Each structure stands twice: as structure tokens, then as C-alpha cells.
Image (tube, rainbow, N blue to C red):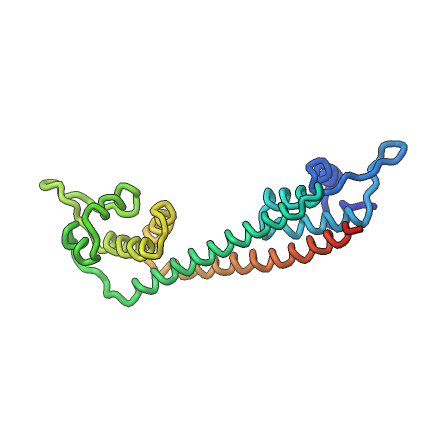
Length: 224
């Protein structure tokens, strides 16, 4: 059976998949040629369907677990991927909520200092200094006094960080978003980015459904 033809893979790729445990071991002819069966075709189909939703490494681990008879391990890996997707969805929702909370607020005018800004948000000045050390905000310094001066863009970044921190997100999770807002020049240009993010999550969820269906067909084919 020529496994490589339909998915457009090389014969070496098929051999590599077998050697990696992605496919079950093939029987050999008397001349040493590998003999692939419909069961191998189902295994290959399952693996290729799992990759878009779970990634190559996790898909490999799932198939290896199935082929060594550790189905529960494979299901646990799938559950972990679904958990990660759910976390990603919650992160997106938190970002969208934080940006919505920013939108109705009038454009900040002028500069402010750390004390008034901290009081406005109900946080301590030490918190703002911590966020600065983490790279979330970058206020300039007064050349004479050394005081931190927060521009309108800095205040926007502080307020966005504040919203996400209230949502339970860590500073290292918030920093990339703040950097993206800063590079985009504000919140509005991120709308298309968030739409693309949502589309990618939806595509990944659909891919997981397809992978689950193909894997279930392979599991059924393996049953006595």
C-alpha cells in the first residue's frame, strides 16, 4: 500500500513516521520491504489531522501513546491541548474587555506624575514602579528633578495594564500586548489583530474536532 501518494508525502517521510512511533510498526517481506495496511493509512490520516489543532510535537506524542497501547495518556494530552485553547480564548476575552473599558474614556491630555496617576487608579506608586521595571510602561524623567512624567500614551498603557492585572493576568503575559499597543500607535489599530486572533482560535478548535474524529476512527480500527 502506497501511503505517501495521497497526502503528497515522500516515502522517506513515511518511514520516518514509522520509526518515530507515529505509525504502528510495519511487517516486512522476505526481501525486507515494509508492508503497509489500511490500519497504517488510518494512523497517518489521524496524525495529519491532529497536527493543525495540537501542533506537531503534541500530535506525535498522542500517536506514540496510542501505538504503545497507552490510550489514556493520549487522551490526557488531548485534554491538555483543549485546556490551553480555553486559556487562549479567555486571554482574548480579557484583552477585548480591557480594550472596551478603555474606549469610552476621553483622550488624555497633558502629562501627569506618579502620585496623581496612582491615586486616579487606586493603586500604589510602588505598583507603577514595578510595572515600569517589567517593561510595561516607559515614562520619561524630568531632566532637573528626575521625577517620572507620564504622557497620554503612558497613561493609556497603565490603564490597560491595570485592567488586565485585575483580570488575573501576569506581568509577563501583559507585556507583549502593551508592546503591541505601543507599536500600533494606540488601541484602534488592534481591532484587526484581535479579529485575526479570534479566527485562528476558531480554526484551531475546528481542527481539533477533525483530529478527534480521525483519531477515533483509528482507535476503532485498532480494536480487536
